[in-house]
Length: 227
Image (cartoon, rainbow, N blue to C red; front, side, top):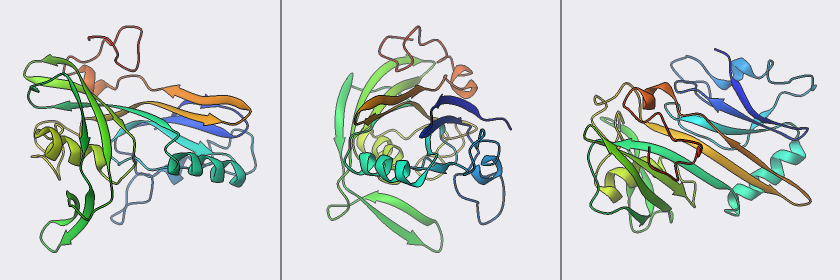
């Protein structure tokens, strides 16, 4: 597996993480980002370190820091909600409106039967996601998600509980059978830096999306136009 580099400078890398590659080594074993850190040194002594997390099934933009000071600054930018994150997701159905905002606090629960998952809960952590319908093809709808917060499984739960329709292929919040993977893709990431140009990248639409007819976003990788 070769990782595509979408952005590179002395402080940061943004890679196009493929679906199936875990950020942390899975307990049961399998592919992980650690397997690629040496090749991502690109002449630097230190291997880069992931600044944030995206799910194993989710593809797209992942920011890596090339030194500890940069990592600290980038992590603070995420905490302060200064980072612009744009995702594309496919749901199995249509929506009654074209755009909206989902505000559902989330909390983690676990059971012996189902393991752990996130649920909407009044006393959970505040979670906010803006969404916009892009197009519908073959009974499925491509949706743009712009999360302001970064809770675990936020978009997946907000799709299932906020929109009322889970992402295709989601094994936890959906049926896990409607697609070969959870249909979520981190299409764009912009990280502001004081005194320097923004860190910015857009990840190409993956094959799993193209196979469902959502492959042509024109000249706009953020999906601001119809596909």
